[in-house]
Image 1 (cartoon, rainbow, N blue to C red):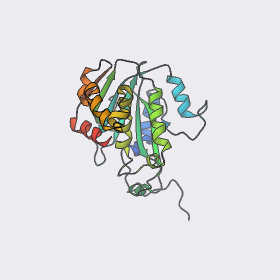
Image 2 (tube, rainbow, N blue to C red):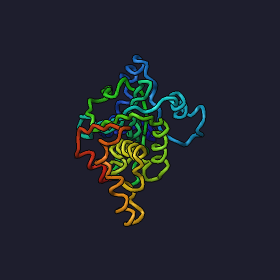
Image 3 (cartoon, rainbow, N blue to C red):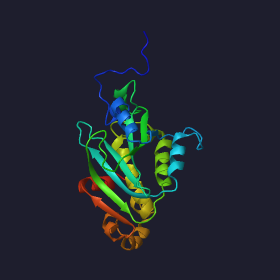
Image 4 (spheres, rainbow, N blue to C red):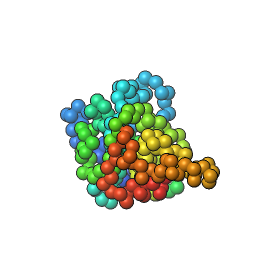
Length: 244
């Protein structure tokens, strides 16, 4: 008898919260709380009405991002990481990268090609919502200037459109990569770090001329009136800076 596509070995664990997003109890709890359904982050369909991600964006397009957190679940062995953010209308959401809940070959995520990623955005009750698993906040960023919601869409689209980062690989393009990239590139946009501190200056002379004027990112965080950042795990943030 052929194996159905939704069949998977019962003893093969999936990283992070993959089990829970399709859990009937979790679904019932979300309905009881009046939360929006999770929306898959993908860009295959036309960016127009009827596309679930487009419709989600349209519902919240008149809001701006007030704060953002990088969070890490306490549950071993994966210690799943994800992003939460709060909008100016007080609604809160989380963004996750997981495997498909019904992934047929979950262990293929250890191979270079990986498996299909299941990136989602879903409404939560607050930034510390622990509906799936208890978690700790590693980094919190509070903005005092308007940060457009479209920035989230732009970052997620950039990840999706690259063949290497679109898939889930347990070694590299995993939940840690996805969540840390969103936080880091949000900061890059606010600070305009792209050229000098992410990709490097175009020439050595420019580096010397601009270094004293611009300063390194971590050194100027406390001086910018448009952003406040709280770091619970400084080693994690220094790791982010090295990786990017």
